[in-house]
Image 1: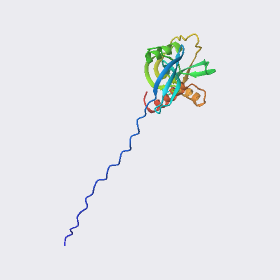
Image 2 (image 1 turned 45 degrees about the vertical axis):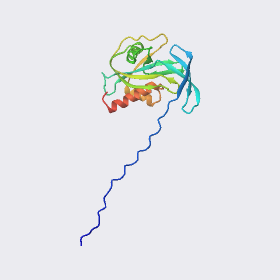
Image 3 (image 1 turned 90 degrees about the vertical axis):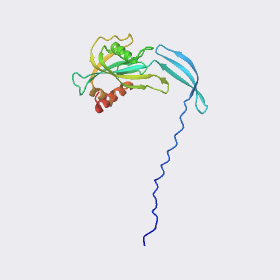
Image 4 (image 1 turned 180 degrees about the vertical axis):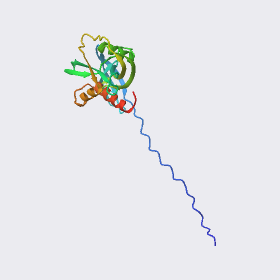
Length: 209
């Protein structure tokens, strides 16, 4: 006798439930902003902030036009270990001489690249034919609203520097390997220089700059 048992129909498993979306974070609300200090390079504002929960507090914020940092390299002698243009100068706020990349502030309304070219000529005399952006970052966003933009400058040629009266700058030309050795030996203490050198080295190892 033939079997009359019914075949059980397989059903597809129910799709997994999607995790609930986290609530969209709400930004604190700016209640008021008062100029506390007006300086030549930056201003300080006392901002009253209201958090999403209703708590109010005051933050002192430094407002700045923004800065540019220039990593100029010379690949003409040894492309595998290009020379880097660095500076050594006394920094009053740090109370010591620092080894740094050339950098400077943007003038109001000045495009970042124009500021980078201007500052690099003023401080070092060097000009470059090729410019590209490496990185844009906040220097210290807890209290400083300043963007810093790092440019890579290539195909450079020497010129005459025209530093300001308060800038006593010694120009250093070092192979990248020596500059990185100074970083490893804790002899470079300037944040923008550390970021630029290490980012450039990492990028050139993984891609063609």
